Length: 270
Image 1 (cartoon, rainbow, N blue to C red):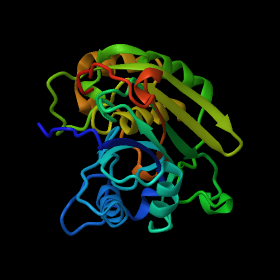
Image 2: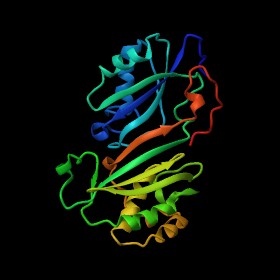
Image 3: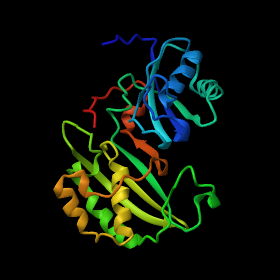
C-alpha cells in the first residue's frame, strides 16, 4: 500500500458530464472516456501522475450531474483555484462543479452510503427534440399509465436478489442489493423514474425501467414484478432501457468522512 505523506492532500471532486460522446467512465485504450479525459487534465494541473477513484462507473451514454471522484495530490494549490484551473482545461461536455479537501481515509467508492439515478422517458408522440431532450431522454411514444408504474415500482424497494434486473453477463459475489426508493412521476411530456440504492448491479436501473415501461403500457400487471424477481432470470424482465435516458444525480456520504482531517473505517465495496 502506498504510504501517505503529511504533505499529501485527499481531494473530493464533484463532476457533471454529458455521456453522449464518452465511451463510459473507465479508461479504455483507444476510446474517449470520462476517467481518461479527467486524469489527463489533472496531470497537467497537478504536475504529477494521478489515479482517480469514482463513486462508481457509468456506462457509455449515461450522464451525471453529481458524480464524486477522489484524488490524492501533493499540490498546494487552494481548492477554489484548482476548480478553475481544472475546469478551464476540460471539454464542454465535462465540468468540475466543486473541489474540496477531505480526510485522508476518504474513498469515493467504498464510503458511499447511497446514490440516486434518474431515468427520463419522453412519453409523447412528438419527438424529444421538441423539448431539446433528445440526448437525455428515451422516446417512448405509446401512452404510459404512471399509477400502474408506481405500483410496480414499490415492489423493487427493499433488500433482495436482483438477478432478474442485472445484465446477463453480470457476475458478482452476491446479487443481493438494497433499493431505498423507486419513485415514478410525470412532468408534462416526461415520466421520471428515480431509483435510490446503496449499490447497483450492471444495468440494474435500466432493466428496472424497461420492466416498468412494460407495466405502464399495459403488457403486465404490477404484481408480475414479484414473479420476475423471484424467478432470478434476466429473460423474465423487460428490455434494457437505452443508456442516454439515465443520469447519476447525486452520491451520499456520511458527513464525518467529508470533513478534512477526520478518520473513518472504510466499508466493503457495494
